[in-house]
Image (cartoon, rainbow, N blue to C red; front, side):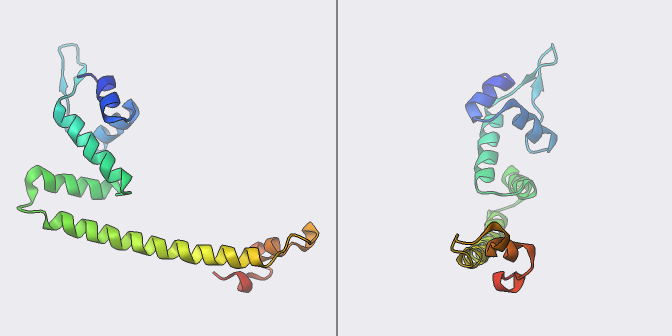
Length: 137
């Protein structure tokens, strides 16, 4: 199949396919006599796997490692399990950081009732660092 057909089937752009090729995530496609790329079902399956990984916010390095194991460099899926466990830990860290950010924003918002002149805005003074201790860091 041609790249446009592959892009539609994989629900991604032609540019995305080319990017993944350059990143080494997709196997080299065959070429026609006219030097056009021709893709096989294996490319579609690989793109769907990559898209699934990206939907889970896996990095390109994580995807590369997962694909290497899937391509047979590992005797079992223990390495993939460890990678997912590591990614889960990273997600937990990010969730904690987002909760801290939420608390800081709530504290900042609680400083102002909207009844002040803009020059006396307690949110702006908190953001400018004039009273950063009340906002938290």
